[in-house]
Image (cartoon, rainbow, N blue to C red; front, side, top):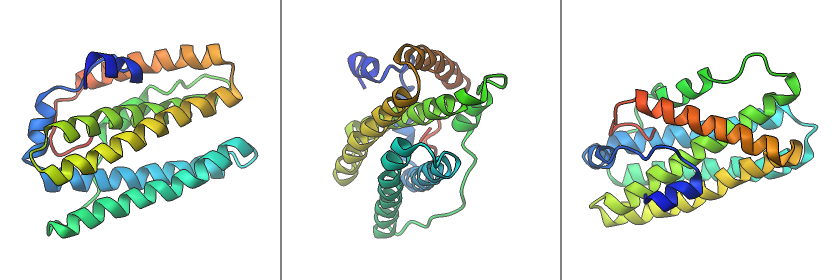
Length: 200
């Protein structure tokens, strides 16, 4: 992803270029991890709906995303089956776990949702960048097209979570909090070695 495109997403640090090379030689591993990421994304949206059923805008926005994310899982699984790959076991996501460790502990309860939405937006933004790298660098033409479609979808999801936050909090507060999370995410990325068997 170019510097300009990274700036659209707001990411402070580009993915290590070695990541796409490693992913290209670990297709079964990267597809497996991608499949589980889509499952987790659907589950996270369900969890938000269950926790905040009174927030009608959130429920209306995330209900179709649950269906979309699960549809993405099915797409990845279908691609894996075509290639004779097995799903394997779900793996620990060090990237997401490190992000969550930075969730503020002493914020007012009314701000908890803000940070949850920021983390969701961050994961979608980084996924968008990673999908772009796969769409540009994989030798497999089918997978390049496959990941281009996912890139477009994740860009929309990233914006959706930011816009949802702006429904419930002042725009200035959302922007300031997003900048804080961008800084945190850049630090998290520096702690992680590029792994071709993980989406993040």
